[in-house]
Image (tube, rainbow, N blue to C red; front, side, top):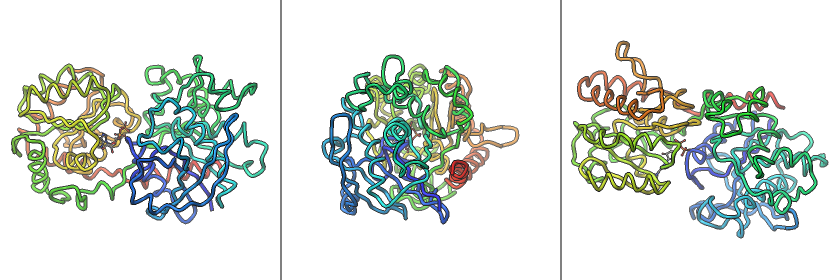
Length: 476
Ligand code: ADP
């Protein structure tokens, strides 16, 4: 039996800020089978809903050394969908409501990584593989070598590091090297961590892990060149023989229009019932109830990555067309203000909700006709997959996982499950929206076929889980 510890900073339904949380809550569940035992470990944040806190029970407690500190930690656990979830508890570091964004994030996640490794001798679980995700957990492969390399209990453990978004690297002042990590004088650790005058947790992980993955085949290629490489492309090229791309899946139970509790009307393929959800959504959003108008949605973190500067250029022109729009998201102030400005100017055309709201997100996936993702880069992207499951047509830029999951509509053959454009250019976005809207108005049969193709696109975890399991086996 292969044993895997899956370490991640977010897992839905316990804590989620974006796609990483979706993956944390669904991939480990899909990986568990009769030959592979997967357990998950994440921090116990203050924001975890009470119903789950009540189910947790303390398994063990121990002290963790972090440079000159000795920090009391405990591990709590619960079972979710047949999978063991461990929660690292330390009130001082993780009791806060937000997951990240604190001055001591470098120290918080260094503690998390060290505590994960330290806890293994206290838990009755000695993994063959530790699967780390993003910068929050990227110190684990390095610490395994530097701090636990002499301990036979850890000799055979292998590490996998998955990159969900290369932009976020965990870069901190060099003082962290000695004061937090306690590595003063460790030359090999310095070489792995130092990056442009800072310590960089992700770089260390990229160099120390046995295998690297990222969340789509296209992104795995893209990040090896300087446009997408976020300065780490050289490091990735150096390790390219250990790097592969595996497309994420989605939790097809959570995102299932047939049983989704948030919807006005449940449906599978009926466009008529989908239309009922559209009407309900228009009512919630104070837009006129018009099934005949195309409703275009954006459900996203409002950050540069998502191509919102392209939207800024052509939003006025888009809103001059016969359509309605809904924006749901939070993020950079400039984008929150931009969308709020348009909502104020064109209240009958665009509804903007600056918030994180899971229920409304589901209602939008069900009620909208088109979901926009004009991303500058997109490691995988889940929103387009979720939209398709609800028969909503994605309109995306051809990058990363968007390129790997959206096949552009071919008006001659009827093939395809969405619309896409190649260049990061505002007018390409606008023309593609115009094309989509034209098809919506002028060819109902083609539109129905497209929605059906989207709905039938299969993004369950099964295929991806198989590829991860093959990778694990190649290491053991
Ligand atoms: P990223 O991980 O870059 O944020 P993804 O497309 O991979 O982008 O995943 C986004 C996830 O977060 C989806 O599940 C999407 O529905 C959800 N999401 C994004 N913004 C919001 C919001 N404001 N309210 C509710 N859910 C949101």
